[in-house]
Length: 640
Image 1 (tube, rainbow, N blue to C red):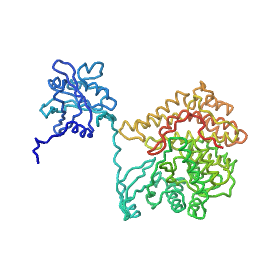
Image 2: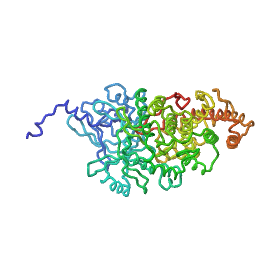
Image 3: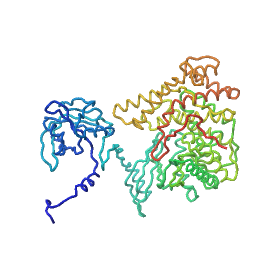
Image 4: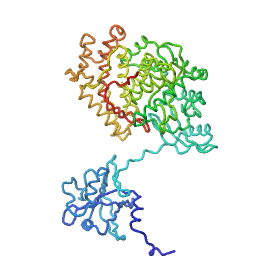
């Protein structure tokens, strides 16, 4: 073996290999012997000791700035933020006045502390020693501080960039849940990862006798104690999904395998399926997937209902059927039990369903909450249909109605192709009035389901902001279908008008800010709080609460308060009294004043959708569709 002194390393290769090690970027500043500020960019800063607190950096011996820093008794380490690349290049250059026009303030030692840095560390210079072609400078920390949310600038492989903090480590599964998984799957779970979509699902690897398999633990929407108090949550959840998936095994429908259901935890253990829920970027790609989804639904609807006897038993226990089919009856039962003011649009839509019943006779297994976002796809093909919690036996047009409603939330632009393909696969035309009926039913499920959280939003709720957006889309969708049934053109939201419920929005914003100030995490973080602030700002600028500032909307729609006065035939200054009077009008005169009511409620829906448009950006999840970029107008797609 050669002695170390005889070993040679190519300098270029040395730099190239070590370039794979990412380093932070700092600017070392000081006040030189002449009393002038001096600074240099350094990529070799390091922590040395905790007790005593020591740091160090290694300037090049050829540096022209370090000799001036060396004359100072102290220096300040400025950790650059990700947006300070230009500042780094300024201090990395030779010559010139690097502090010209630069904002800085003296650190406690007097050394310059640069504005906007991610952190600063003020030090006394302890020693300088030689280290090859560099010096090693040791400093003792005097004071230091950092910006809590700053992203640092990083140098890696010859380029600059920023880094985002890693998510917090996934907490281990509760021991009793892990034991249940081991019993069901035949091996212990390991490498657990969170897979959140508004609930804490987990992906995990399981060492089974046949090898390692990847599985998904799907959690209930709410804790089991809460679920038991709700007809909708207890009747339409993970237990129902486990029953449906078990019955679909071997049917030809692409679904995940259900390995087991834990009644104690309300969790469902599923086989992991490849793919993602985001639709392709191109219109042709989206249309191709929606056509394949239509063919899958046609096969599903043609299955013999005899194999779904257990699903039928669940439907009977949940009270499904009548004028409020499927989950709608359970959701409305929960809604009717909650105290609070009435909702005239919800009441009118419920009445409308009684006037447009769907012919009975046809029954099949339904996907339930059908539409975009409810299937996985990979390489342009569907790998699995997801989310069977609302599945039940019912009219086949229910899936098409729910799919049309979901298009309002996650538009594909391919609904017409979807309907056409479904009709061709079934060999008969679709029933347009029935689709309208179930679109209204889907809108009511959403509207009634989120009503409590929209009235009294909670800052810690993971869906708090999304529910305001879902509420706005549901209102617009209901008014669109009711208007279409009367021959009205869809409402246009291009008019600049204000939104309703500013008090609830303002309270939610205050609660989120209070939690953030106290160091408590809020769902969606600062980004979603900003979107909420923009929605509130937009609502105020476009006309105030409900547009009711008294000055008119200026955009073609009447002022909301004046609009209500015209509907009622008198002016009522109290907002709650106005709401109650409109509800009474719906209950007593819906049939004879339907045109007026649909027009009035449609204008209110327009205001709400326009005001809350920024909150569309909160309705995202990993692997899901990006927030829809679309002009504000009718939310539901037209179709032949």
